[in-house]
Amino acid sequence: KAGVTQTPRYLIKTRGQQVTLSCSPISGHRSVSWYQQTPGQGLQFLFEYFSETQRNKGNFPGRFSGRQFSNSRSEMNVSTLELGDSALYLCASSLEAGGDEQYFGPGTRLTVT
Amino acid sequence: AQSVSQHNHHVILSEAASLELGCNYSYGGTVNLFWYVQYPGQHLQLLLKYFSGDPLVKGIKGFEAEFIKSKFSFNLRKPSVQWSDTAEYFCAVTPSGAGSYQLTFGKGTKLSVIP
Image (cartoon, rainbow over all chains, first blue to last red; front, top):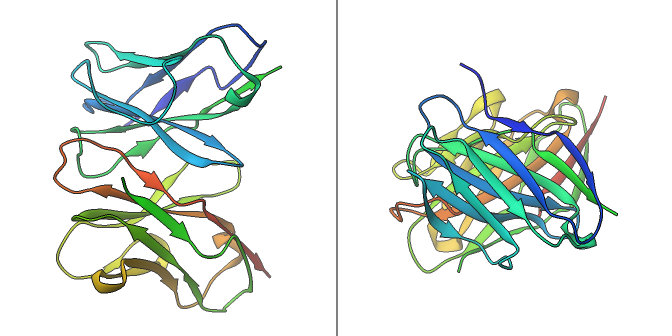
């Protein structure tokens, strides 16, 4: 069974631009969560989607948004990029919302210059 | 809101030494607890988890962890480490029965095992 896939793996953007990251969960998984990983703040929860609905949201500004499609694939968008948005963005999937365990993808490394 | 504290930022051990990584959490209700590992260049993998039942849980690669409710702790142990255990280890917690996932992670402990 294929794992969680994330595209692109690496991305360089300029301040003020916007970016969209994509995540394909493990087949059959219906819940997708997003996390931001930085050296200073560590791993922080962004949001969780289940059945195309946002179930939970972390403490991030409204510039961070996401959505989930009917096939459970998810995208997250960051508008008006800031230097501090440079991070590894991780996607994780699980069978159900609040399910047994989450499986993480390799992440998308976003660099904002 | 919950929080997680990992006591050691960087631990250096020789092969065959015993390992114990500390993890304490803060939350007023029942929690599910996890230890994840991130090997160099690889993505996060689940080592073990505790939801309920026996507070001593065994995970992959010889790791185990003990949940001590009175101390709000979930320490990770391994009797004899190997060079291949060199990685970063993350403790995480989520409220149980919430019907939604919001893992709160500790800042991580980097383990370096010297051959």
